[in-house]
Length: 281
Image (cartoon, rainbow, N blue to C red; front, top):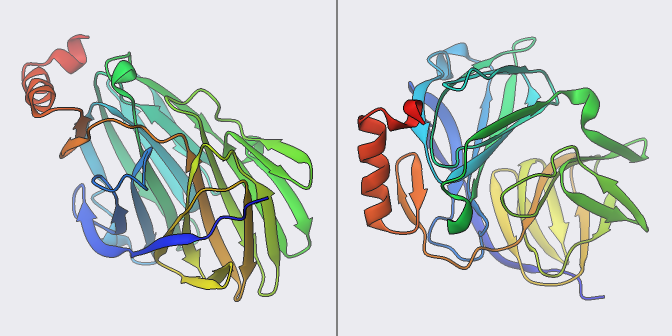
């Protein structure tokens, strides 16, 4: 079995979005090794001033978002009437499709806020489908303790470990994906089988890990090469997001909250939003 190795490491960088929410961001709109993923935002703070304004109502078209909270709540409202509030360990998925207007508000738990929002591209054939939303509270996220200090949580798709397939609650995504969270103490290891047709990314949000001799630290994203096997070792108490999915071999044109295949489609999205068609549809 070919074990995946690191092709590239990208350092996250400080940024802000919404009403001044401070985040650490890593994006790959122009990087084919990222596909089908587009961007990862990490929200982490013990200071309410860093996020108190939240993300007021704003539009999207052409993407999906997956929000996953380690600590804190995340309140969602959209123009379709959907409302949801995540709790520690929960996730929410939204497919913007042809258009959605939503707001998002992070809320601390016990003085902590730590979570992620992942942007996932949609193929051209699905960019104009109706918008969808679903949340997954902590109790429905698939968990397996590999031992006392070694935990895997599967949010989306399937992950095979020692012949056992773990299935996450999120299955109906625009492209097949596997998204999981590995939490382990120093010295622990993780091995799994991945679909060889999927691309794979690792975002380390805590500690440091080793991937076939190469180390990845907190705040770094590792883009992996092709293969069927994944072998990780925690060199410190660590937390890692595993993102894997079918790449989309199509042009990516990004403008603010819209991701389409051409500038003409971007201009149409702007016009439709300004003329109220997101709500009317």
